[in-house]
Length: 172
Image (cartoon, rainbow, N blue to C red; front, side, top):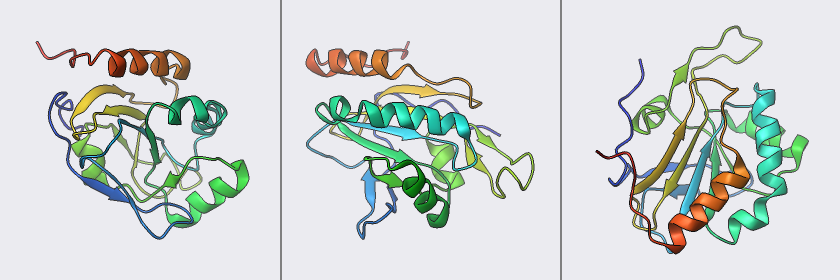
C-alpha cells in the first residue's frame, strides 16, 4: 500500500534521523535558515543507489553552496556505517527511516525479494525540495531503483526555484 501523493505547499511532518558518526540527529520539516534537499535511497543492498550517491558526492560542493543535503534510508546503523566506510561519502549519511515516515512522504515501500537483498521493508527512491519554513516545494519519487532524477538538471532547477521564489507546481 502506498500513501497518497505528498501535499506540495504544505508543511511536512517533522522527522529526525540518526546520522553516522554524529551524536545529534538530522531533522527535516522544522524551520531552518536554508532550503533542504532530502534524498531517500533504498539502502545498502542497492547498487544503483551507490552509483547515484557517488554522483551526488562528486557534485556535493555545488549542492551545499545552495542548500542543506539530507541522505537517508531505512538501513540499520551497521549497514549505514559500512556504506559510509566503503564509499567515503562526504555528505552526512542518515539511517533508520521508519515505514510510517516513508508513508508520510508518499514514498513507495517495498518488501525484500530475498534475505540476500535485505530483511525489512524499505523505501524506494525519492527526492524532496523543502523550503526553509518546512513546506514541501518539489517531489520526485520512484517505485523502483531505475528511475532517478538527473542531479545536474535537478540542481539547476532548484537554483532557479530558489532565486526566483517560484511557487509549487502540480497543485491544480
